Length: 72
Image (cartoon, rainbow, N blue to C red):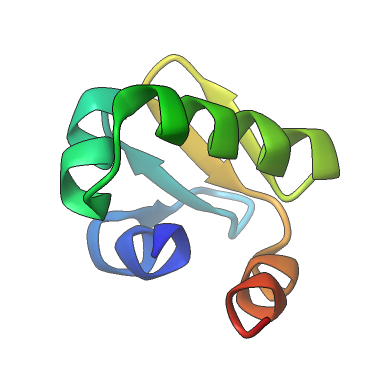
């Protein structure tokens, strides 16, 4: 869901990485989850090195890993 939203609402930066500006509250509402669940999922994806979260900006570092995760 996160990757789909990134592709729909995000933009590529100068280096070609996909970035999406979205508050955690809004992300949770769009995903149909609670804010705390969203925060935990983002923290886990960041720990794996798949994304980087800086305030309201999510940078997708490994789109392939996120895609593979969603296929599980």
